[in-house]
Length: 87
Image (cartoon, rainbow, N blue to C red; front, side, top):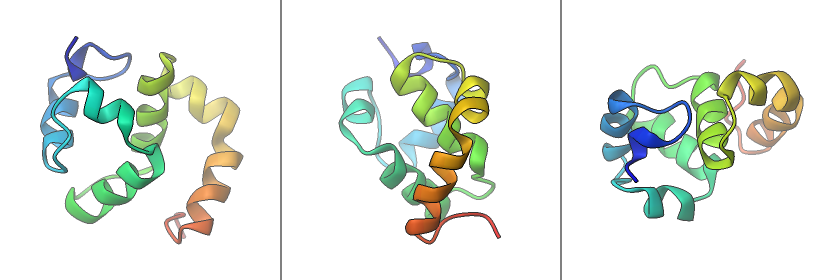
């Protein structure tokens, strides 16, 4: 299985993840989704909240919009604790 085969991901997702040295599903699944989001925020221009929703969705095999709808507050609180919440 390739990264692009995960729910909500595609070729563009593979390109973006490669910028933070995530090149396969095992590496992706082994990392903390919030730390991965932090790395993406630092290295990939335009990384926004949809990215963390997509990361979590791909890990849990659910659509990113479902993650956004059902877990937004929980995710925003964790990002705020990390100093990464949107202003």
